[in-house]
Image 1: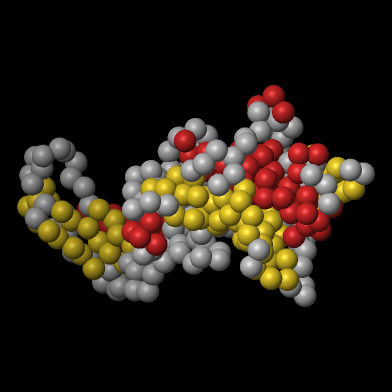
Image 2: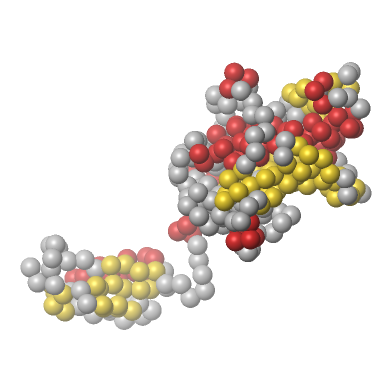
Length: 295
């Protein structure tokens, strides 16, 4: 298996494929924390990767950060990666975000456009440099004589798209990483790949359509509140009218109207649980009307 050093990352060719091909940028753990992080359930060929370049000229990116409503991971993150990779914004076709079992960097969702995106930006820079290494060998042109624009590598009168460079090949770029996956700051991409200067940006700073807006507006987007597990019930609290009130007696649920609802009483806590959210809301209102509290 042939390997190439790319600014401290390792590019390996894992064989040729009859159909398709990809370059997958995955993690290579460094230091004493490697063992702890390696005990997670992440799969070495897919979930550990930040970036995948596919033979159809599309790009997949992964981030442990979540959408907090501003859609930064679906717009700004795509722009930042597109600029580092020198590809059109539209090439970033898939964003996997905030999925513990399918994203690589862990940590919390904060400082999205500061500390939050630097891992992905550096991973993109490593990936661009790896593609230039592949292009240099494929085109027979020195790497420092190559340039990239729009996902096309040119030099010496020759050219090749990223898709052409990865087509038929199984390429793995192992990026150096430190830290702990389960710590507050998660894993950190180490090394110093050459980052694109802000003066050379062609994608960042421009306006692009937010791809997740239609899913949000039509209710198709999946949120934490959409999660369902077997036997899950919905609950609603019954509150007193004044602060500091003590429970005197809890009201009874009307089993004819709400046959599947149960009352939960623990000290001064009164709640109802039901199979559906709307039943829990209605039942809690009915129970509240019969619940007595001290002033």
